[in-house]
Length: 176
Ligand code: SF4
Image (cartoon, rainbow, N blue to C red; front, side, top):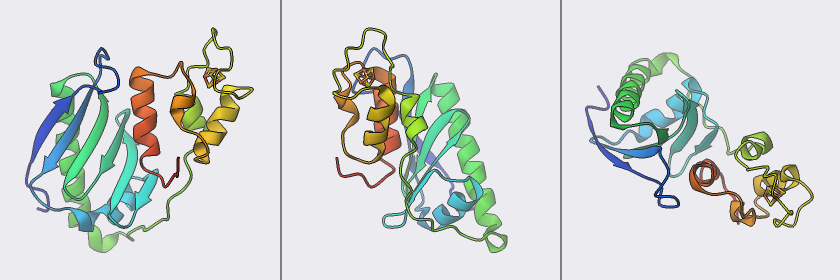
């Protein structure tokens, strides 16, 4: 067994303390660096970094980032759900590690953030007067995906959507 245990740290978004959903860090008892390329292959990571190793993917409606010593999970309802997702991750990590001889590890280079993944988190506000300086939310989403502007350019983006977008973008090499 590669991962024997973890300690959960549950917290609310620092950007919006009124947000209902919770975030969780699972602090790992073992270093799981070596399994990360195998997780990238089996769980179809949306983003992967080689040094330091990390993989980001979506599962159970959550955006999950696995680091060597920590796993970050967002948009959780409560501690019970956090424990459920952590246990599932521990099982997946150990099962994939056990089968690693049958799996081709994937060391894919980082890809750009997807425009539509960004767009669906933008508010497309009816009250908008295009304060971001762009003609449409789509144009701003494209610029964000290129690292040309930061999400804070839209004054209507806040709370959980802002936190989720920041976490999604953190998986890529963007010079904003
Ligand atoms: S991204 Fe720009 S166009 Fe879209 S809601 Fe925000 S300010 Fe308005």
